[in-house]
Image (tube, rainbow, N blue to C red; front, side, top):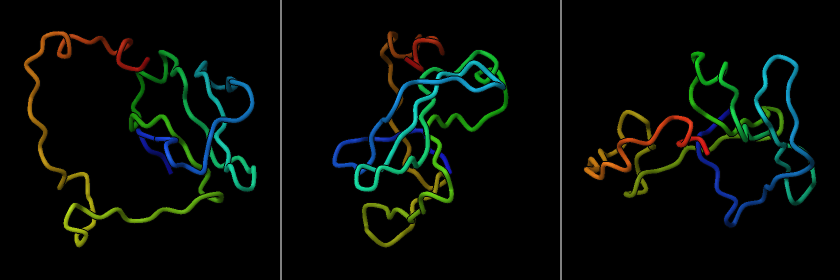
Length: 109
């Protein structure tokens, strides 16, 4: 399981340990653990390497170990319908040139 956004506000998980790198790439990773039991439940890609940024991926930087967590369906504002990526409301286009000209490198900081 993975996601592209994770908020620790009112969360039961937090970073643990030191940053590390894998043998297969140069991404900088840090584990996340349950604050109640202390078990590592996944990791966050702190800084993706250029190789991974250029490869085909889902753009998610929060990875959860499937044996450590379970998913739940999130409901829309009505509380009835399950949220699906294809059914998310459109956001207004920004005309701010500073926002439109952000480089990929700056975006991942």
